[in-house]
Length: 180
Image 1 (cartoon, one colour):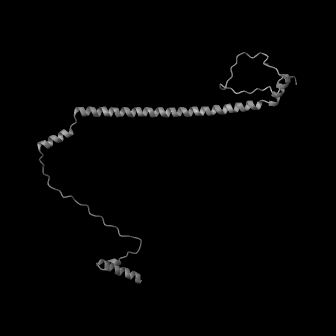
Image 2 (cartoon, one colour):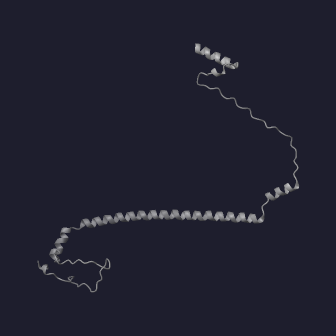
Image 3 (tube, helix red, strand yellow):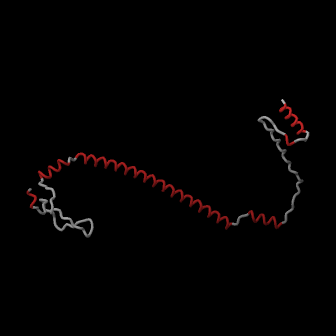
């Protein structure tokens, strides 16, 4: 009760202009600020101002556009429009080429996948044991032994020049170890 009484006394004394430092408002509301009244501009009686002929001439000259300047502005506007149109054309070319590249990349991915699938199917269908048996037994092929393989350094690159045809029998030279 005493606190409420103190608050009332402080408010009351504040309204009277005393003890302004001790003013405290309890609660969660704050006083709303009063709006400032709008100022009304002072109206002066309308007096026609007289302007000199030179000022009027200067104003008219500033408001008018010379024919050369008008042509320059028209040419500049046409150039700006042309640049914009060319830019849009280039932009559409870039977009269409990007879409074309994306389509080609998708086609390449599909072809690579199909190629890998076919390669794996071909590799799986070949039985290497059967190939070895046919080569050794039916075609007379033998494993390379010492002295039959000649290694040399190729001075010119990755290819060999062939100066004569390979015989139809397919045998260029026969080793003495072939009879084994």
